[in-house]
Length: 364
Image (cartoon, rainbow, N blue to C red; front, side, top):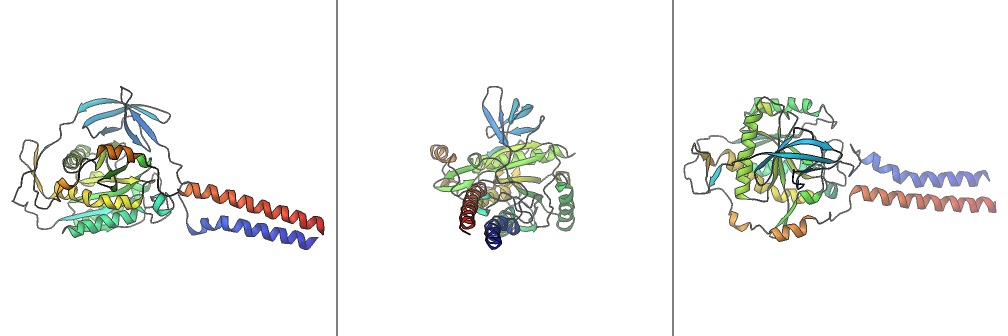
């Protein structure tokens, strides 16, 4: 009888062991998919934005260049009033042969939230350490380098993902500025909202949109905000599908270091990482144009040098196709679904062993 009891206990331990193995292989910061999503409505009841976190006083610019401010947050809903119409710089896409006198082009990047990942591709929305966001940053670095822009990516870890992460990443950002004197400094992130808000399809190519984030708590907010608007306006002219919006949150995001310091949300946790890779050449083209291939004529008009710009005529916006496909669910199961099924099978397996053990016990 004792031997039978020991056999049952051994079987139970063997059944539980596979369930514990994933915790040894990867450590997640938060449960996959367990991220709040806020929907922001204007005073007409129309949805104008979505975000994983919002606060009263947040400001954002929509794709229509309407500037809104959130005045109330209730539950998972935010309510915003329109502040003004933004007058974006006029884009004159004429050939401008005279290059700007820049001997060396340089861009530096880092990641405050190193753990951020892409569930369909990485299996987890967050990996403690270097998550999938590092792959995205490396792709962007390679794209800049291929364009003759000296690009530095600092992969220093600033974990854990908590309120002190930006204080830790400020050391990295300051070091990059002091050592390389870059033309721009970018913090690379991914968002925490649904895939449908970021997903787009252009001519059959699946892509991810990008959100520009600016911190209101830094003393150089207006300078950062103006640069963000310039990048946003160029994106609207060159690739209208590229940017979601410009979102101004309550943080500082280390942007007081440089007026061309921006935070990019490169897709969201539920979008395929490969779709973000597809977007990178277009984002790099807009950034390169904003920094190096455009000049202002003094009347808020940007003259774009088309010599290095890809043929934008090849990108045809198919709104109907986009609408039909934007709500497409992820093509892979999220890790949340995998865990549910794993637990079901584990309990079934353990139950079977218990029943078998009872039968053996009775026979003994």
